[in-house]
Amino acid sequence: MDSITAMKTIRDSLRTNLTDAYQYAGGTARLGSTWIYYDEPHVSGKYPQIEIKKVDNPSTVLSIGPSYGEREFVFMNIYFYIKNGFKLIISGTEYKNTEAVEYYLGLIKRTLKAQNSTLFTAGVKGYSHLNTTKVEYDPATQLYYGAVSVRVEFFINCG
Image (cartoon, rainbow, N blue to C red):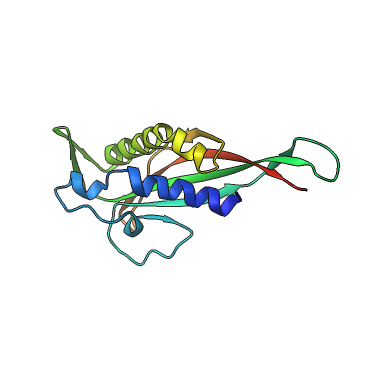
C-alpha cells in the first residue's frame, strides 16, 4: 500500500457506503464517482459534494538494518460542501446549511468507523478520525463546508 492507494481506499469506501445527500432532498441517488472526489477534477456543478485532500504523510521506522520496516500514516481532510438553502430531510428532521454540514460530517465519521474491518482487509491497518472543523460559509460561492480530519496507517517493508 502507498498514500495514493490509502486515500483511494477511503474514497471508495465512502462511495460504496455513504448515502448521497441528494436522496435526502428527494432526488435520485448519484453514482459515488459524481459527488465524492479525491485529487480528481470535478466538473459537476452539482452539490452536495465531498472532496478528500491529503494533509501530511509521515512515517515511523519500526526496525533497523537494510530491510527496515515502516509504519506510514496519511492524514487527510474529508470536506463536505453544500449550497446555501439546500434542505435534507432525514427521519423527519430538516437540516440545511450549517446543520446539514454538521450532520454529514458525523455521518462520514460513523460510516468510515463502521467499515473498519473492510478497510483493514484492504490494507488500511489503522483508521481514526482526529478532528471535525467548524462549519464555514463562503459568500462568493454560496457554499457551506466543513471537514473531518482523519488518519489512516499501513505498514511497508523497505527490504
